[in-house]
Image: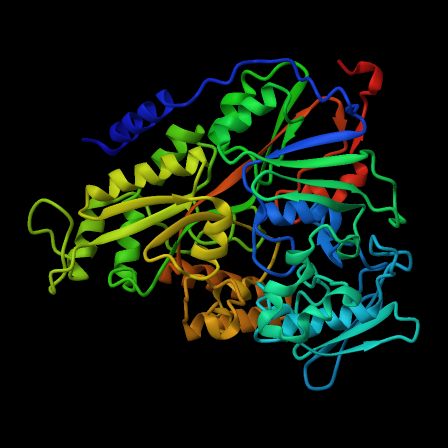
Amino acid sequence: MRAWTRLRDILAAALLCLPMAAHAQNTPSPAVSPRSELIIGLSQFPTVLHPSIESMIVKAYALGFVHRPITAYDADWKLVCLLCTKLPTVENGLAKTEAGGGMAVTFSIDPEASWADGQKVTTDDVLFSWEVGKHPQSGVANAGIYRAITKIDTSADKKTFTIHLAKASGSYNVLTDFRVLPAHLEKAAFAEPAEYRKRSLYMAQPTNPGLYDGPYRVTEVVTGSHVTLEPNPHWAGKKPEFGRIVLKTIENTSALQAALLSGQVHMIAGEMGLPLDQAVSLANRLPPEMKAEFKPGLVYEHLDVNPAHPALSDARVRRAILMGIDRRAISREMFGGKLPLADSNISSLEPVFTTAARHYSYDPRRAAALLDEAGWKQAGPGPRRNAAGQPLIIELGTTAGNHSRELVQQVIQAQLRQIGIEIRPFTEVSRSFFADKVTKRAFTGMVLYSWFGTPGQVPRSTLHSAFIPKPGNNFSGQNFTGYANPKMDALIDALGAELDPTKRVELWHQFQELYADDLPALPLFFTTSAFITPLWLKGLHPTGHDAPSSLWVTEWTSTRDAAAQR
């Protein structure tokens, strides 16, 4: 049977099982006007709210309302200050090279920046955050940005600080992942660094106002259900429009659509809402008071692999798997051809993208030959076996309730069966999937999920061998595949240190070529995010990268007043 025919059969059967979402009037709660309350639908629940522990897109979205990064890329993909007052550059003299090849970069904290308990954000918080971030047992996700800093000098007024980098870096002023923590609350929890993950107030008291310095603060957390946000009374910036924002989690994406159409939620976030296929279908039947906006970006859908698996440790098997999946047919049949195929983790939207890297087309014959070459022979019905008689069986996990991923999982299972690989699918709710299976590297085969990328970000934490999460470092780092290649380490180090733009582009090309050869993860697509919003909500601008639209919530306005409430 041709693969695309089988794919259509799978999709048709799955679609028949979907519940139909009836159109309904968008009727918010009679107790609160639309202007004072905004209910946002999400398909995942944030496992933790600590800014530096665990990496989840949905957590980044939630934190966008309540916590300020020092810098961030905006919707125009320009680096801007959020917690700082002026972006340091070599040109304005706030960034300078130092003897020995390092750099000194000076930032000033917004003088009015305050935690929601009234305490000012100061360099004491910066120094404490650096101490936490660089500690080998703190459990932070992206430790690389902290460990690259050798010293921090601070001013007497506790508002200006200078970071000293061991090596010059092209991203010297990108402090997006340097998340400032409230020292006056968190120091006690960090007294035993190995226990910090459990003792942090972000885990123990997530509604403590002093944990948040954004325009909103967290006032209620109901695990698996919703997070409620209310304005930070000490926020000195532009006053936010809404008196309350509710982040409502509905993990089944079909039920999420129904919630939107019945008025249980006002909008669905593009960062972690509907998969593209469901969003495209929904866009064609939205009521006139709603709209859909599609934003291509750096969301990288991929398969992480466990190299401890007897087959997945062999690059030939990883290549065979990629060539055994008809990614183009999946994009065409499920997503209307809107998903560009990925050859690495670098999108064609990035200026450093190259077409010179190895490209993997659908080629089941070549895939079968590679499996033979790797010693996994097809002797009869059932999965291939190696010389020791082990069957080629691989678990494939993904997030439960994400209809598109579950369908892709089924398609991959059917297509790889054709080349003698047995896939055993499983799903798990996102909270435990990311906290346990992914972050603690507890998956035995492959896991399907996505990364949200930053423009020009060097993937040190996700691909450098120094950042493999393990019990000894309290699962710090984001190299969840355990990938270790000295050539990749050297390339990442060189990219981090190179200031010359032309030389950086060449290094990026080498990086993409090595990635496509090694396949530390199996690239699938770069996806498009769908923002489903009411027409009365203005000022929301999708970014297309990992700085969520929620960071600019003070620009969101409502043109609908209480008189329009029904």
